[in-house]
Image 1 (cartoon, rainbow, N blue to C red):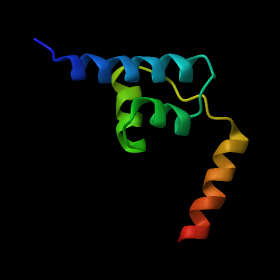
Image 2: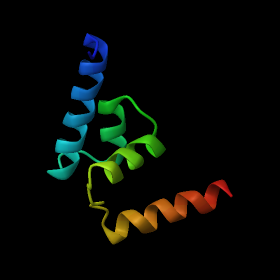
Image 3: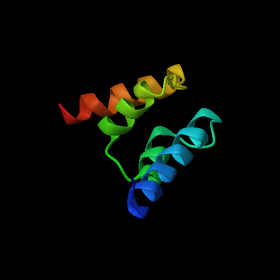
Length: 70
């Protein structure tokens, strides 16, 4: 049987997924809502069949940020 904390955590994940699917939350915001890492959130999206709603401009912005780090 799930504990109250597990149910609460699952609820946060479901809320994050729903907000992301409705474009009410970015991946970053979904991560904060769910309380997980970005890599875990991407895994969760994959598990639940959630498609990325990343625009081309967002991709380019992320790529530019990554290049600054490297």
